[in-house]
Every structure is written in structure tokens, then in C-alpha cells.
Length: 395
Image (cartoon, rainbow, N blue to C red):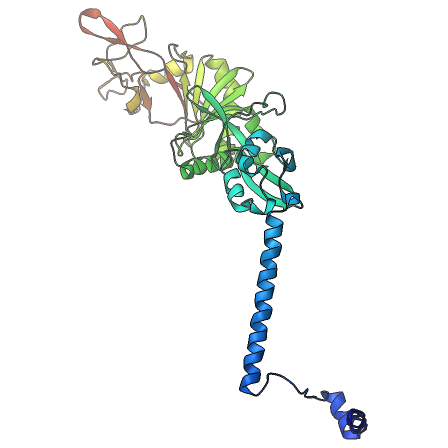
């Protein structure tokens, strides 16, 4: 009977019409079978499926139970835990997180929990934990990359680009050699977001300085980030260190201007301590505390009134005012205040500009206004030293 059916089916395929349909889309053949149509047959089929599913679950549980209690999958000792990528984090520090996993079945080790615990270590940026059958664990860590030293009081540590504070590794002097600037203005009490923002400013600052091709950042010994609107850095050269105020932008341009005039400033002002480059049309030089800024002939001439014109107006710098006493007129050490002079133009008396003021008139070329440490006249001829530091303004 079956042979006859297949023979008839083959004869039909030989038909030309069926051949064409076969080439176009094939012949659809229905196979007999499927779920039983009777109610009893359906119940029997469902019961058989449930029995097969139960047997599968039971078999899986048996296998799982056998694996969890099989001694071949037990972690024998700490030597079965492999570590890689840890240059600064000691292996013992990593293994301390797996102490309770020794002699535990490898499938009972909570990998996600161990990964989170590893990434809580300051030096660990990322971590992966995996099982190696039959009884080993592999731990791979990616450590943070420090970009600067950080000073907090008397403590010197490291900091990465995200503002994460790192302790100095014990093997820093033997394995690694760092040559970073020391960053100040970061505090462990500050939120991480604030430290990250200041380190982003630091990255922009050093990146801009090195953008010209020269490694200018290697000349920096210290960078103060406490004021985001005024990045201050200690710049080293042959003459020593000078603090430079860079502001918050145009870092490379301001450094080049500073470098161009530094030797000239040092030759005229041996006690130069600070240079403020934040202003477009003038540079403020500050001397070391307790020293006087020398006054050149050109600067002395600038303080004398012109003979044929009215003296330029002057404005007092707020931070140059003395903090104690009321000064009548600042005078140079060992000199008495000169009386008012009349201009030759006949416009009336003109008071000689004080050396504690900055002229608002701008002259062509380069000239320096010097603010040395001055004395003030007090009652009965006594004198008192002003408390501000000597400064120079270079318009």
C-alpha cells in the first residue's frame, strides 16, 4: 500500500504542470500527525510532557548537587587564585577579599560581589573575576594612572585624572619613577565631582602648555588649583622658581610672554617672586617678602611730574593700602616728602605722584612701575613700615 502511494506521487511529479510549479515555488506536502484529536489522547500527551519535564529538572538538580559537592571543584588554597595587572596593589590585598572562598566550591563564589569589592580599592579602576575549571579563579585588574602628586598638609600622595586620591605605593621608589608637578587645592573632604572638575582644569592647563610641542609642563614644580579662575604655577628656570598667575585661559600665550621677559625682569629685580599674567595690557611683578624693589632712573622719572604738562591721574590699588595707621604721604626710605610743585604751564599746583599709586596713563614701549617697601610719616617724626609686599607693574 505504501509503495503504491509513493509510486503515484512520483507519477504526479512527472507531470509538466507540477514541474513548472516546482520550479516556481515548490510543492507543499502535508504530513499527517500532530496532537491527538480525542480528549483522552490529549490528556495522555500532556501527562507525558510533564513527566519528561520533571525528569529533566530532577536530572539537572542531581547533576548540580553532584557538582557543588564534588571535591574536584573546591578551591584548594590561595595559590589557586590567579592575579594579573596589579602593579601597585599588593597581591595579598587582592587575596584578602577572597579569604572566605578558600576551600569553597568554585561555583559558590559570588563573582559580581567580588568584582564590586575589588573596584572599591582606591588603586583599582576596573576588575574582572572569572572561573577556571575545575578549581581556579582568575582576577584581572586595571589600575588607575596617576597624573600628578597631590599635597594635603604634610602628606604627599598621588591623584588620577578623575580626581581620585591615591596613597603613595610602597614600591614607588623602586619600581616606578614619577616626575609630576605637585597639585594643591584638592581635599579628600571635597566631593569627587569637585575634584574631578579641578583635575579636568589641570589637564586642560598642562595640555595647552604642551600644545606648542615643547614639554612646558615639565618645568612646573607646583600647580595651585584652589581658585578655578586663576591657575597658579611655580615655574622653574636657571634663576630659581617664580610663581606665575595664568588665569583660566590662554595658558600657552601667557607662558610665552612670561618666558620672553623673564630674564629681563630677573636682571632688574633679583628678588622677583611672582608674576601676574592675567591682564592683557600689563604685568604685575611681586618681590619676595621683606625685600625692596629697586627703582631705576626711568621709573624715578615716571614718578616725577612733567615740567610742561599736568601729571597723569593715578588710582590707588586696593591691596596696596597699609593695614595699620593712617599714612600721610609715602616717601622713600631716608628721604623727606617733597613739597608740592607748580607746573611750568601755570595751571596751578600739582602734587607729585606717590610711589604707592599706579598711573593709569599708558606709555609706548616697555616701562616698569616699581612699588618698593615704603615708610609712612607719623606723629612726632616716627615712622612705621607698610605691610604690603613690593610690586612692579609692567604696562
